[in-house]
Image (tube, rainbow, N blue to C red; front, side, top):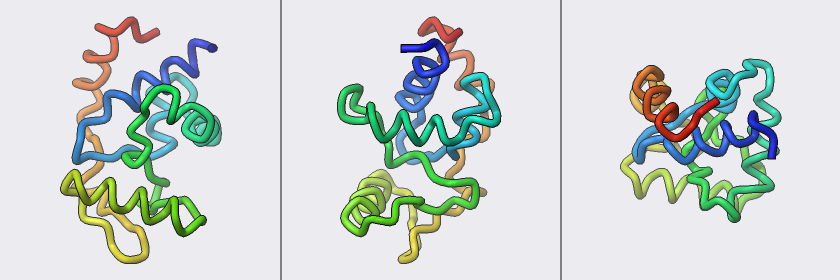
Length: 115
């Protein structure tokens, strides 16, 4: 696993319950602000293996990006179980639920050998 991939996994594991981050936000914090698609790839291939809270990651507009109905409903349900309000069309209000204190998250990640 590359250090960038490890960083993505670590970041996603540390998104607090009841909060969300965007794919781009995770990519930037992991070290490459232009790698949002890599975050998608990691979520798709590693969520089960690393027990990633994949439901806490949304697109830059706050929308659930999954098109497949069952996965969309699962992400919506998991987010709502954590107290995140999700509209019927899958939108999350980023002004309310987005992780904004990245410094606190960075400090937490550095304790876990964040590179």
